Amino acid sequence: MSFYVNDDYLYCDGLKIKDIQEQVPHSPFYLYSLDQITANYTAYETALEGLESIIGYAIKANNNLAILRHLRKLGSGAVLVSGNELRIAMAAGFDPEQMLLNGNGKTHPELILAARHGVMINVDSEFDFEHIQQAARVAEKTVNVLIRINPDVDPQVHHYVSTGIKNSKFGIRNERLHWFLDRINDDSRLNLVGVHCHLGSTIKKTSIFRDATELMMEFIDEIRSQGFEVKYLNIGGGLGIDYERTGEAIPSPADLIDSIRDLLTSDVGLIIEPGRSIIGNTAAFVNRVVGVKTNGNKNFIVTDGSMAELIRPSLYDTYQHIDFIEPVDAEIEAYDVVGPVCESADFLGKDRSLSTPHEGAGLVVYDAGAYCYAMSSNYNLKMRPPEYLVDGENLVEIRRAENLEDYMRLFETTQ
Ligand SMILES: *Cc1c(COP(=O)(O)O)cnc(C)c1O
Image (cartoon, rainbow, N blue to C red; front, top):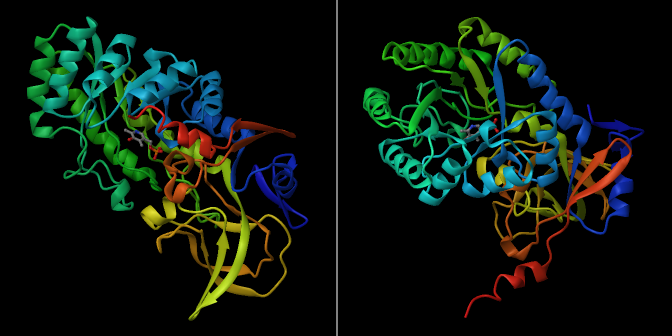
C-alpha cells in the first residue's frame, strides 16, 4: 500500500504528507503515488498474460498529462470520450491504433479527427453510425469500428454509473444488430473489428463480467455467422475499488480476467477499459481544517477543500474514507466533513467518527485518483488545485495550481 500510517503520521511511499503540506504553497492539493499507478497497471498486464489484448486506460477518469505519459510508457492504450481526450492522448504519445473513441453523442469534428488518426470508433446508435460513415468519407480513411451492445446485465451499482442495461442511453438496440451489420457490409470504408459493452462502474462482482462475456460471445458467434471477422471482444471497464477501506475483498484484475478466460476462444482478442481500478486508489486529496462548529445536533469539520475540487460524495452520495494525516487526540465525535462552498450538498463525508481537530490540521480524502480532479470546477471561483506526485522519495509537481489570472484571461477575447 502506498498510503500508510507510521507513528500517527500518514505517508505516501517515502514521504510524510504533513511535511509535504508544510512545504507546498497551496492547500488543498492532490497527491499521487507513482509506484501505485505502476502496480495497478502491471496487475492488469500480468492478469492478461497469454491473451491477445489491449489495455485501454479510460482517460476520463484522470487526464493529468504526466500520468498519461507514465501509463503510455508502461504500454497502455487509451479509451476516449471526446476529441480533446484524443488530442491529449496524442500529446502524451499514445499510439492512435491503440485508442478507441466511445460516446453516445460524438460530434462530426470529433469523428473526423478520430478517423484521420486511425482511432477505433464505437458505433452507439443509428445516427452515430451515419455520422461515422460521413467522417470516414470526409477523412478518406477506412475506419475500424466496434458495435456497442447493451448486454442488459445489471451491474448492481448506483444508477448514475449503470450503463449497460436496456434503458441506458448508451449502445444500440440489440434487435437492430442486423441493420448495422448490413450497412457495415455495404460500406467499404468501415471495417468491423469487434463488439463492445460497458456495464457500469464500481462493480464488485466478477459474476457480472462473466454473465456479460457469455452474452457477448453469443453476439460474436452470430456476427461471425454473417461472414464477419470479429477480432476483439471489448468488455469495457468498471471494476470497483475498496473506497470503504474495510479490507472488503474486491476482485483484482486477475480475478476479473480469470473469471472469463475459459469463455474466450483463442481467435478473440480482449480489450478492457479500466479507469477507476488503475488510478482510483493512487491519490489522496489533502486538505487543511479551517475550523470546527456545531449547529443543532450536528458537528461539522470545515475544510478548505470542497465539492469544487472533489464532487463524488455530493454527486453520487458515495463514501470516500477520510482521516487525519497527523496525530489528533482530542475527543471523538460524529462529524460531517464539509467545504466552504455555498451549497448544502457541499460535503466530503457525512457522519464520520473523528477526533476533534485543531485548526490547520491536515485531513485527507482517500482514493481520490479517479473522477475527482477530472470532475473539479471553479464553482465559487475556487481555483483548481495543484497536483503532486511522489516518486519514491521525491516530490514532483505534475500540475500547477490554477490562479485567478488564468481565469480572467478567458474574458480577454470577448467583445
Ligand atoms: C467510463 C468508462 C470506462 C471506465 O470505467 P471505470 O469504472 O473507470 O473503469 C470504460 N469504458 C467506457 C465506455 C466508459 O464510459
